[in-house]
Each structure stands twice: as structure tokens, then as C-alpha cells.
Image (cartoon, rainbow, N blue to C red; front, side, top):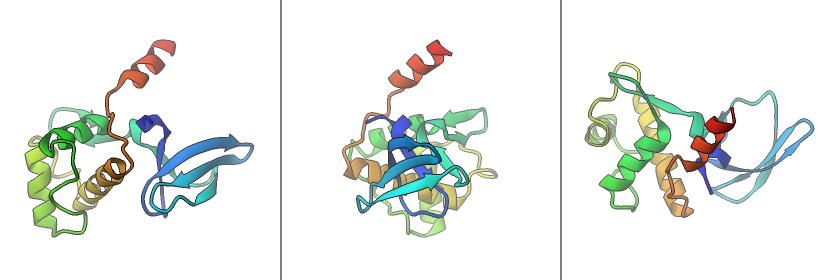
Length: 140
């Protein structure tokens, strides 16, 4: 499964898998507990493939940040948890992405990225390559 089908929904913990679209929104399944919810158009929803992280030079797509974490952790879960201290999270993220913009990337963002990575690894969603995204840009 690609990141194009994985969602983050504001106010809901964890990540969700897009199941199907409906007339008034869509149905998503939680990767944490497997429960299905219907999501209306009013909800603030982010598709993981569309998220980027600020660096000093550019905005780096989340998939590339996840790839860097995957390389650092040799495909396993992170050595720090998303509930660790702020300084520990920032040190870890600096090892992964040394040029991230410390003024615009907050500790809460780092927590989310680490939590999301671990959820994805738990569900064997580890292909962070951009092959599907490249096909989408060719069609546009």
C-alpha cells in the first residue's frame, strides 16, 4: 500500500487507510484498532504523500524523510518513542535530517512523524518510494 492511501485526520489519533469514497466524504479504517469511520468533507484530512517537512533549503516530501528514518533504523522501528523528551526527539531528528528548519519544525511535528513511521512499520507499509506519485504528475 502506498502513502497516497494513508491519511491523518485532525482530532483522531494515529493513521487511517482510505477504504472508499462516499457521496458526503469517505470511509477510512484506523491502522491502530481496525475500526472504520466515515469522514465528512468538513474534517481536516491530510494525505501522507502530500505532506512535506521544512528544511533550510526546501520543503522535503514526508516520504523522503521516512526513507531516511528507514535507512537509519535498518527497516525497523525507531530507537526513540514519540513520547520521549523534546530534546531527545530533536536530537534524533537532527541525526535523520540535519538541515531541518528548527524554527518551523516543532517537537509536536517530530512526534507525529516518529509515531507515523512506527505505525507504518507495524503494518508492513515500508515502500516509501515515489513511483505512484511520478505517475500522477505525468497525468496532470
